[in-house]
Length: 346
Image (tube, rainbow, N blue to C red; front, top):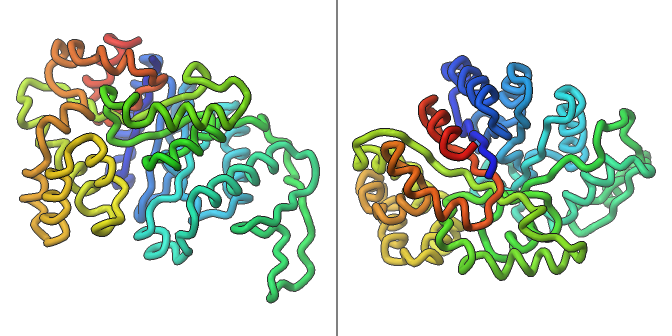
């Protein structure tokens, strides 16, 4: 099992020096990868570029670049550029985000995520291969554009530079069963959130296998990188550590979406926490955020995070090693957490 580190959402004006130090420590310890995030604050690409420039060996990827924020061609150009600049250390993490951000921030129709993702990935890979000028006419992307308001001057183009690789690994963020199946079919890796190793097989096993079967190329967990982000905090006060995890958990389960349209709430329900998920969402959407945080069950936190002193973390590593994941991406801001995990895993 490889290790990565997720730098998450940061105020890079205040946290950049600390993030660079953390990245360099992870690089020294032999971590496989570093990941940056974006929602509707700082973007994922700019800090990733800076961190990559200050490290030597680690791979870097966005977790995730929002597809509605960029045309497929722009994403392909950015990925090819960073892969060339870094000597082949770039990985492309993509996701659609959710309807609130897609329509409320980017001003784009959320549409049909499965078909849109499939088209997007196909266009990006077509650009990297440089087999000919890009031409794609699908339900979601029309290149060259041929709409009623087109000038008629557009023509198929081929990327000018020669990408270092035409097979830059693509990772997809996915939660729902159909999205995960599509990810297993068309991507090299999967970026799950709130991942429970104990429930991986029962929650996702069939859909992942179905995706591999549709790929039709002998794909399996041996070649597919399941790479969850896992909060890891080292310390002796277990209640305090759990309380540090609960606000973000409550935000996603309670506030990232609306009633009846919250992917993270649905996931908690599939894990068997239906009553808690409903209570968290009701409280959060009613403006009672502190109460929503308090309603997050300790049992859920212990399933999706590794908390406590080194000995407790070591005792709880078994399910993570055995469930089939290839890369554990640490959600950790503590240098000591990186060192503990490097000692236990690497």
